[in-house]
Length: 158
Image (cartoon, rainbow, N blue to C red; front, side, top):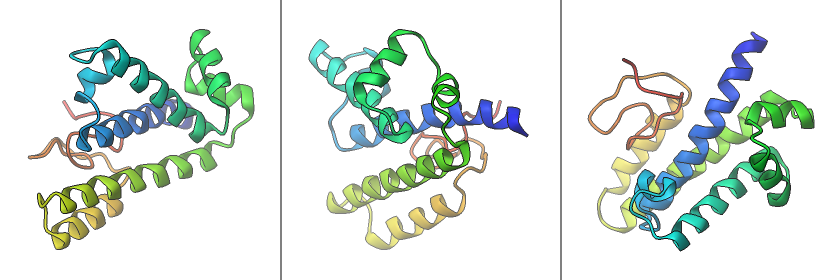
């Protein structure tokens, strides 16, 4: 059971960071995943996205951005940081799920405000996403696994 957490928590942390990037992209701030990793983004945008991703992870782990940058520069994984800091994995998982739920709500609120979805559709989708958080689902019409191409459990089935 302990091994499962050590594998699941880093994967969930990465999924949460990438989900945050996806939400920012839905707001028109990024060039999608390619923008975050360097695809079609300019150097300034890449730097902002890099620091934003590190800040998000640092906030979840309860550490400073400077400390997160140090860990990153040393090649430390999320599992390494959790171990070094003695972070309670259950509490961290709950924080990540709460952050993900808030990101999902913001994304749906944005779609409603832009007239892309009706409020009832957004409410229904948010309920579905909340009810199915952490469940592994196959890739469906919109990317499956939590909505709009972002997984809640790590990766697509093969």
